[in-house]
Length: 445
Ligand code: DSN
Image 1 (cartoon, rainbow, N blue to C red):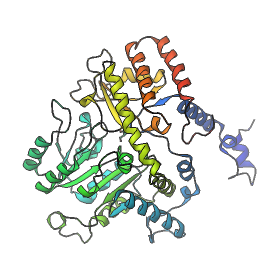
Image 2: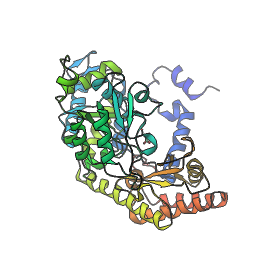
Image 3: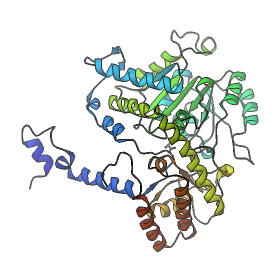
Image 4: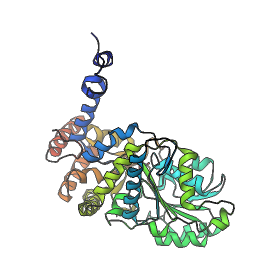
């Protein structure tokens, strides 16, 4: 028997009208399974969220079909009058939300956005300071296996031994000595607020560009639940799919003018904004994903709604409640707690690796990622930590009471990591627990 895809292709007129279930039952079945999983499990990955139905609709729209290499008003393809309006709308919304002079919405995601910053500001082998990955930084902030660590000179800065928070005094000393051309502020597993004003002072003393990577916390910033770095930084980069609850993509904010242009780019005829734009396209990328830009515009409209402020604050309240409940149960947390949307369980004194605990939790319907902790002696593929985040469960409408219950689920699994019956029983309880909440973007039950 012919499969449904053959039928759709064979019958003239059916192409373009059949729905997924009729064209590809295998992918449809996988989609249904993923949907069921997301409805019945607790998504505690700090970098994930649930985009709204409106954001998903724009992501899956016909804007995906359009080639629009270039920028609004200066494209290399015809027929872009409407997408010019669309991209301008996203840019203006972004500038208004963050108070930025310039915005580029074309980066395909966070790492390409960061790569564009390197290419706009630096030359190969220039010195770059960043927080190392095991201490909470990102691969692109100068980690050895990433282009940022192989093509540039890495000057790591670190955490205070006691507080496990950024040691700004040591950072200042290192910056004075090394005079890096760029300093990153931001990370992927740092559960505290960043002191952008202190970083700006340090960067100014060292003649360094200051670049904030706000991928994790952009939603918190818009909601007023974390300080906004824009006034302190030369450039700010972000993904758009984490706490800001947009499509999978990235963006860059910057000043128009480059305060170090005479020093570092005396021959360039382009200001900072223009150099960022040229680094994204044509240097690194081709056609922008206009469907993603459409969905970003929608997400920014949602984030401008006053209810988003309530959402952002609740993410933080929930993270604090989850941290408090785990501390009460005797768990150790990196830095002793959290100021933002994430917490990192320090499992160095436990028998199993972070990876092993993450696997057990997953069997019980709790999805989290294993993560390095400061001073970790285990291999990065095993680690001694678990990172937990509250953006997704907060999008489901959960509050502090539910965080206490989630801590109890986590504790049951981690106390009995080898008892599969316990995992199965927690899995049933978690599924039951989730049925009381709606999952944005997943409308059917
Ligand atoms: N992969 C992202 C995270 O989980 O934090 C960072 O790029």
